[in-house]
Image: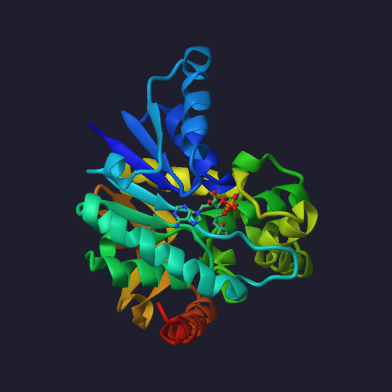
Length: 311
Ligand code: APR
C-alpha cells in the first residue's frame, strides 16, 4: 500500500492533499493537524468528491500520529504563514519549534519516509528537519525551486505572449533574496530566453519572481499563496511515488556539486523512491555558478540563526 502524509491542514496542506488524492497515485493520503476536527472535516469533504471526479485515493483526517504510520512520503506544511510586511525570517522561531515537534513524530511512526519540507523559512526548516530526523540527507528535501520556476515561467509566458506550456524556466539557489534564475536553462519554445525577451524585461521578471510570494501575501493579507505551492509539492510527491527520476529544482543537500558542500540549496535533482537519487550537475555559466555559491553562503549564514533558538 502506498501512503502519503501531509502535516498541517491549512491552505497549503489541504490543497496539497487534494491534488495528490485527485491524481489517484497512492492508496491513502493522511492529513493531520493540531486543530481537532479540521483534518477530519476536510477528509470527509474530499472523499465525497471521489465519485464525481472518478478517483479512488482515500483521505484520512486525524489528530493522531499513529494513523500516519509507515508513510512513504511525509510533507511538512505545519506552521504559520507570512503576514503582510513579515519576512520569512520573522517566522523562524515559531516555525522551528513546530517543525522540530512534527519531525520527531515522523521519525517515530515513519522511519523509512522521505520528508518534503515546505514550511518557511524553507532553507532553515529543511536543514532542521534533516538534523532532527537524523535521516540520510537524500531522504529530506525542501520545496522552493519548483514554485519559483513555475512563477518565473508564468511571468515569461505573459511577457512574451506565448503558450505557458511552451515555456521552460529554471530557478536555483535559495528561496528568497538569493534565488538564482538560470536564463541559460530557460526556453521560450525553441528559443533561448535571451532571444525571446530583452535584458531589461528579463531583469524585471526575475525581480517579480523573487518577490512572487510577497506579491500574493500583499493581496491576500491574511495568509500566503497555496495553489501554485501545493502544485509544486504534489509534483515532487508524484515523482517520488512513481520513482520517475525526473530532474526537478528542489532544495537538496550538497556534497561537492558545483564546488558546494554541507548545505541545503536549490538545485536540479533527480527524484525517486529514496528522495533525491542524484543532484544533477548541469552546465551553468560562470556567473550562474558564482551566484549559486553566494546563495550557499547566504543559506549557511541563515542556518546559523537556528542555533540561537531555545527548543
Ligand atoms: N502540528 C500540526 N499542525 C500544525 C502545528 C503542529 N504542531 N502547528 C500549526 N499547525 C497547523 C495549523 O493549525 C494550520 O492549520 O498548520 C496549519 C497552517 O495552515 P495555514 O495557517 O493555512 O498556513 P499555510 O498557508 O498552509 O502555510 C503553511 O507553508 O508556505 C508555507 O509560509 C508558509 O510556513 C507556512 C506553511
